[in-house]
Every structure is written in C-alpha cells, then in structure tokens.
Length: 153
Ligand code: FES
Ligand code: FES
Image 1 (cartoon, helix red, strand yellow):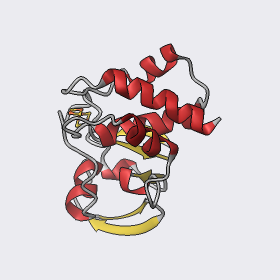
Image 2 (cartoon, protein in one colour):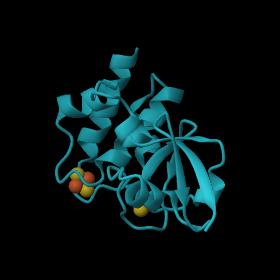
Image 3 (tube, helix red, strand yellow):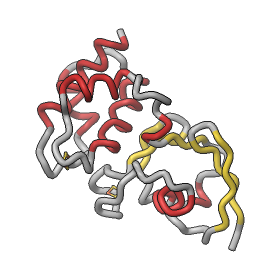
C-alpha cells in the first residue's frame, strides 16, 4: 500500500493505507483521533467535518490521496485546552444533547467564523445548514455561533 505524509493538528504523520481510504478512517483508525465522527458516510450529515487548510471539509468524502500538502485540523486540534471561542461558547450555551454531531458542528462553525467573524443570524443559519443534529439542538447551535462571534469581535 502507498505511504502518505499528513500534517494533522500541526504534527507530521506517515500512514500506509489504500489511496481511496477516506481521511475520516485514517484519522480515527490510524491516528486515534476519534473526535471526528462517522454519521452517514455520504457527505450529508457533517458529523465528520474537519478543516483542510482552514476550510470545513467532509472527512468521509476526502480520500487520503487527495490531501497532499494541505493541513488537516480536527476537533482535537482546534485548541490545546478548549479555549477556542467556539468551544467556550458551546460550553457557555450548553449546546450538546447526546453530543454525537457536535465536533462537526464546531468545526463548521469555527471555519465559518474565521472567514466571517461578524455574521448575521441568517448567515449563521446558512453556514450551519448542512450539519445535521438528530437531537435538534439547532437553536442552541445558532446561539452559540453568535456568542462565539461576539467573543471574536
Ligand atoms: S459522515 Fe461525513 S457527512 Fe456524514
Ligand atoms: S446533540 Fe445529538 S445529534 Fe446533535
């Protein structure tokens, strides 16, 4: 199997996997970064969201061979100590119910806010639209993104 050198959360890793392996499984099964979740496996739920050079990206659809030199950030790498404004806002608003979708929600929110730190409520709704929450915590998610935006401004 081919070897791939990956930059994940600021560290270099070498993995030996088939070229069409989704990065979601490289992260979870080879690098033990299990914060990134499997939901649908077809790009529809957002549970597997990571950052690829800062852009929110579906880990279930991204093959390891497509990553190249781009940097990957997972929920484990968002901050060392939970101090990222999105993580703080999520705690403050007490967003999670079962929690399963929340890493993906925070990765989408943090990428979005890095590009638009002062969004309107409608922009927040649009940005978070593709991340499904089976517990329907959508109101708290939107409130937390707005709270994180306040912390960033
Ligand atoms: S597991 Fe990737 S979008 Fe659902
Ligand atoms: S908190 Fe349960 S799926 Fe979102």
